[in-house]
Length: 338
Image (tube, rainbow, N blue to C red; front, side):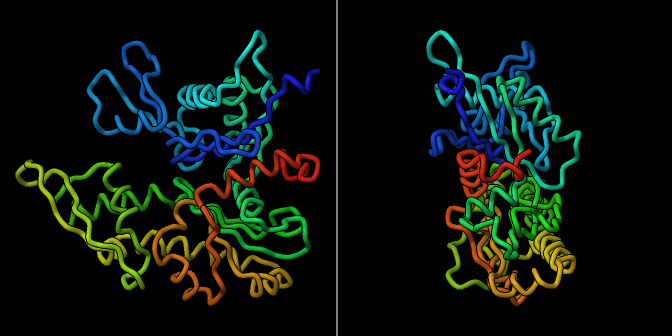
């Protein structure tokens, strides 16, 4: 009887996007952002609607991104966001609201205090039971790697707030490197470059668009994107203006951040036991997360490591898919989930 009232959901609580899987289907895929009325503290919008307000609000509305660098920065906003996103699934029918069992994925480099914050937020939002799984492990399961085998696999998950680099074998993380350089830093690099090079002020949403339209990791790629028109405020005159940017200059401005990710990959490879290094030489490196969609990133990592690089299909949802599979095969993956 109790299991009939228990609903199981898997959540990929990301810095940029939150994805919820229920019954093996992605039911919610929304930006991790909340719009709040300052005077009353009331939630006005979450997800896509709140993102449309981001950077365009007046003094009575503020938009908050509750997660920064993969961890909860604003506890209350995170709790509201999780609660509202769960409402979107439309589970609470009838007299008794269902008891929720959640599996949430977290960066592998977070502290016990930060883990506690994730659990508390989920419990405040109505979860009866909360389990956590590390992102690189969830990404590996989502890509389709058999993580329980005694074979070494290297996963790089580049999200919005953190880049997770992990070597996985026998259902555990052998070594991992978690750095707080990821999609958000790419956006900040683009904003700064526009200010310095073109004397134009742009917002977070515009820099995200530039990254998607003309972002690249190498100054020369095979099928280059078209040039992109950027609109912003001229810093000298204060008048709105348009400039055209191409992928080569974006590749130059992202170079520093990508170099830091490359260094972290090399450090993770250095720490890998020799038997697992031999496996990685054969299997290569797997890329997941939204950052892995940056044009030419796989090629750049291949040039640096000389190893085969595989980008996951639908890399944005690889982690969420893995979390969903771990939830479904709970008994098989018990020791991965804590």
